[in-house]
Structure formats: structure tokens, C-alpha cells
Length: 270
Image (cartoon, rainbow, N blue to C red):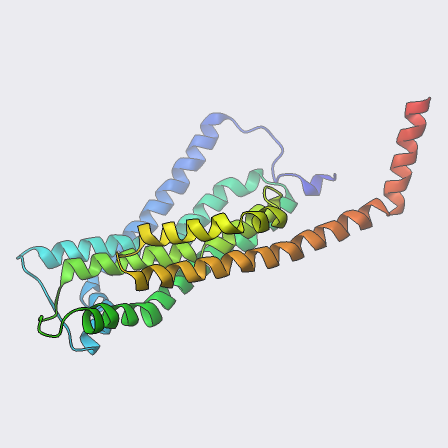
């Protein structure tokens, strides 16, 4: 292995320097979180109006029942959104701390997953808001609830349900990223994923039952993409394993590898 394939700095680094670097990265991540939090809190009213639009557009009212309720709603919403929006910055700081100690091939293996993680989470949030949330609201309030009951939503309860669904679907869309990463680094094989398919189905519905509101529609809406992503991970993992096998076969059949093997055998016999 050449020097170019090793870490960026092969010189030993004192523990104190590591702690100083970690402290700097944590400060940057915290400042980024606070900056996004302040921005979300400042624009809390239009953001909350955006979140309640699926309910308002269907004719339902969203109310507050306490003097300080909307204030605490905006604080909770701003903190959660600061984590979601600021995640790329936080992940970048973690990567900046870890990357100098990684080999080049390790960086190449992890970099696509570092990019895919926030993208898939945001995709899950978007699908939840534009597709799942309106259907859940209509099903639970228009079809399931008796028509003689007046439908009025409390702001704090509505926000809690929306954030619960956001976390659930964001997590669901991270499943293929995690599974493909495990296959990429060799910790899991596609044969294992195929063998554990029945357990995956059970776990998907358990996770959906825990992370979503207690209704069948939300649970099936979450369990279905979990299972689809599980199957997609097997398919993509099979391509990764096939490519890895071809690279290993090409490396074994290369002249340099054969010469190294022959010289090793000659040295062992002598």
C-alpha cells in the first residue's frame, strides 16, 4: 500500500490535540444548530402555517387552549427543525473530525452515504407531508370519526403528530442507506438479508406501530416503504458484492499478484 492510500497525516497526534479538534467541531455544530434555531423561531408563524395547511385546506380548525401554548409549540418546532435542517452541517463537522484518520478507500466508501443520508431523510419528510399526512387526516377525521362530532385540532397535539410522522418516515428512508453501508463494508451479506426476510417483515410492522400514531393507516403507510427499501437494499447489495468479486478476481489474476505469490513461495521453501 502506498503512502497516498494511507491517512492524510501518519504522524501521531497527542490526545490533547484530538480533544481540542473535537471541541472545535462541536462548537461549530452547536453554532450551526443555534443559527438555524433562531431562523426557524423568527419565521415560526409561516412555518407553522405551512405545517397545518393540509388540515386547514380540508376545512378543519387548529386552535390553542392556553396563553403560552403557541410559544412552546414554536420552541419545540424550531428545535426539531434545527436538527433536521442543520443535520448536514453537523454531519460535516463529524466527518471533518474523523476523515483525516481514514484511508483513501475508506473515505471513498463512506462519502456517498454521507451525502445520501440527509437526502433520503428529506425525501421521507416530503413524501410524508405531501402524500401521507393529507390521507391520514382525511381518513381519521372524515371517514373514521362520526360526522356529528365537531373536528377541531389543538395546535400542540397536531404538531406532535406531525413531528412523530416526520421522524418515522425520515427514519424509514434511512434503512436502505444503513443496509447498503453494512453490505459495502462487509458486515452483512445479501444472503443474510434474504434469510432474515421474514424477521424483517415482523420488525417493520413493530417499528411502524411504535413510531406512528395508533392507527392502521399510518402503520401500513410506514411499514410498506420499510419493506420496499429492504428489498431494494438486497438488490443493490447484490450488485455491490458482484462488483467486489470481480475486482478481487481481477486482482488475483494480475501479473503483480502472481509474481508476489511465487516469490513468497520461493522464500518459504528456501
